[in-house]
Amino acid sequence: MNSTALFKRLGLSSHPRFVARPGKGAAGVQVVHSPIDGSVLGGVRLDDAKKYEAAIRSAQEAFEKWRLVPAPVRGQIVRELGDAIRAHKADLGMLVSLEVGKITSEGQGEIQEIVDIADFAVGLSRQLPGQVFPSERAHHRIVEQWLPLGLVGVISAFNFPAAVWAWNACLAAVCGDVTIWKPSLLAPLTALACNSIAEKVAAKHGHPGIFQLIIGSDEQIGKPLVADKRVALISATGSTRMGRAVGQVVAQRLGRTLLELGGNNAVIVTEEADLKLAIPAIVFGAVGTAGQRCTTTRRLIVHEKLADRVCKKLVAAFEQVMSRIGDPTAPGTLVGPLINEQAVKNYEHAVLAAKAEGGRVLIGGQRVKKASLKSQNGGSGLYVQPTIVRAPASNKLPIAQEETFAPILYVFTFKTLSQAIAIQNSVDAGLSSAIFTERFREVEAFLHPGGTGSDCGIANINCGTSGAEIGGAFGGEKDTGGGRESGSDSWKAYMRRQTSAINFSGTLALAQGIKFE
Image (tube, rainbow, N blue to C red; front, side, top):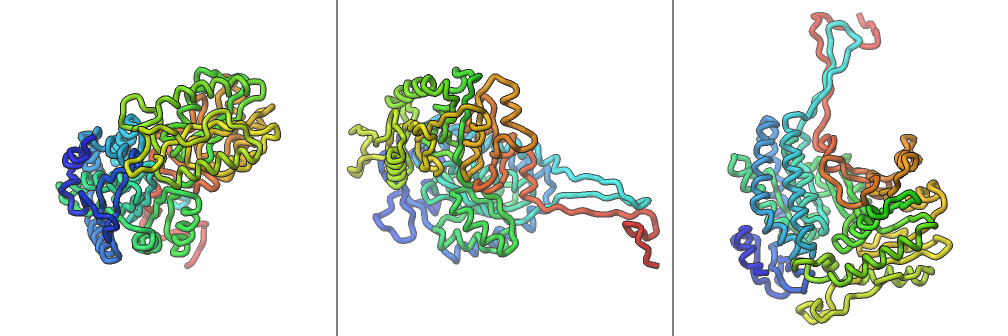
């Protein structure tokens, strides 16, 4: 892949913050290495405290003007943003693949999410509904309206370097807010390209500054952003550890947070499951994005009568996947690299821990040892084998309580559905869950309105844990943070609510029948 031509088409080559050939250890520059082969893609000039302050002030100025633009007009600008992203979809998708190692279809799919959420936001811009309530006082009415919130800080992770920003930025824009984006330092090029497109569209219509980008370390940029009272909402995606730290700081200043944190997702397969549906969904959920999704299927809870059969089918499927590990930009590849060496070490640690705890590795468990997958700098490469670990008869496997960002699937068994649901809900995170069954009662038990079923924010029936659509609210409970992004009424996080009592009687009447004469 000729990255030079790609960068030129995306406007990166001429961007003042892009460094085509960063020197080793260049001060103030984040050097970006592709996980595919370790090659240097380029560099990005980092922001410091002075540039951070300039960005915040620019955002404040932009907000004062942007908030007064009618919401449907704001929606038309977001529509044009979606069209601009659509025009660059192939190149942006390839950039995602180069920078974070997603296979081509997943890179393209991530950019499609920007287009989809932009379309959603355009429709939303003609709604943003309030409500009218009956008043107990004659000739009064009570109305509710939603108003622009202000500055929205977005902290995104490497695994979705574009889509998560768009979920926030498109909704925030139609709500009248200004976005300040701090991307992962593992994926700053994708951020630079996407934000540049958005900012050009906004500037064209006389609204420069509504899409701000600040790139830097946690010390220089992240901590000041989180602690800044001028930033009304912090939307942060990342680890639970990071979320706890962010939540504490923002709570101290009585700001708002929208936290999308860890996941330790399970699929339950009952006796009544259609395995033709279940097996492909489990395989994609476990190995898609090389296991580096917050919605990755990490635990399989299968009925004991089906366990051997299901494991046999999964091993056969994983064997097919093994031959299709490699360069994510190459046709036919199903699994690309992990993001960096630390991720590989975490994978190896988890496999060793599982063995020590009595788990049995059915397939995988090692780095991929192929000369073609070694990195350019002589390293062993960042490719690992998708792995299945069967828990011991005791069903106890402590390592499975942890989220390892790698393609490892732990298999547990159950006798009763209530036992299966208890196993699923036993972890700290509560993001995504799924059950495969053809039995109506099992579906209803899993979705029980009394809350005794899945305790996750996402509970799917006969489809996997991964691959959420933008129409529904995305997010989870417990250590996942409780935030909701994307569809449904997630837009409310980006606005402030105002309730008004309107008196058209000509006399003053107090509520609750109070007399004060």
